[in-house]
Image 1 (tube, rainbow, N blue to C red):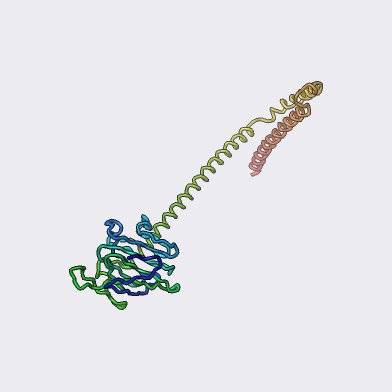
Image 2: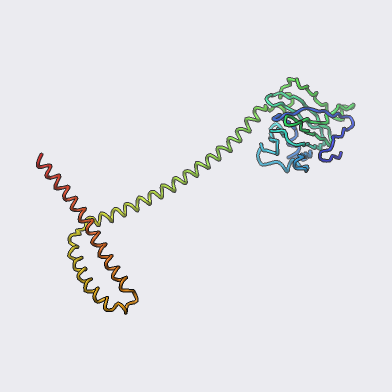
Length: 313
């Protein structure tokens, strides 16, 4: 049978076209996962009007058991041999095209229930299941439902299709034993697992950042300790003993200054620069000596005051 994307469903001899409403988040269960993915004796194609091309189901699968395909959530259950399409929102026109050498089963479970609302049997050969959007609230699913042949030996007896008010439990056919609430819970757990992995990666990044900051703080601490040790070493020196040396340096500088001026025009470096350097060096020595002498004097004065106070007591 030859269909064109978006074409009308052709009625085959001995079959009837049935329409059934499917709302957002209803479960459309197809009982032939292994036949499509492993045995390869069923060809399953899907079409979305938004894509404008028919795709093989094997090309839209992922390495996960639950994944997203356009407006549908898709889940695979190898234990129950089912492929479940669940429209999260009502989107564009779409259809399934299924070609099989044996009859296949399909069921619809309404959202929020655990019972089969409608069950269908797909004939051998080509079958097309259309999903025609009705606004944003629902699809009208058009399907060729299998009719019992006159010779029961030609095709196994098809199970009766329950009405929408049927209370048939999912345990009747084994492939429908899955509770929709279980499938929802499984999807939530997978999403939660993915979220936990992202949280763990974020925490690991924060730990690495904190370790890097801690290393920098340790380096800063070591640098400050080294600087403090140098200051303490300078403080411990007897700067008063250096005063005579500085006076001698200053007197020599005065003599050297006169000599340098005599030969100023013969030097590569301008004499003004050399004089400025000497003056700056002397000023730095005097300033540093002043700082440490005053610090030692303050410390000596504090000790004397403490001794005086102690005597009065």
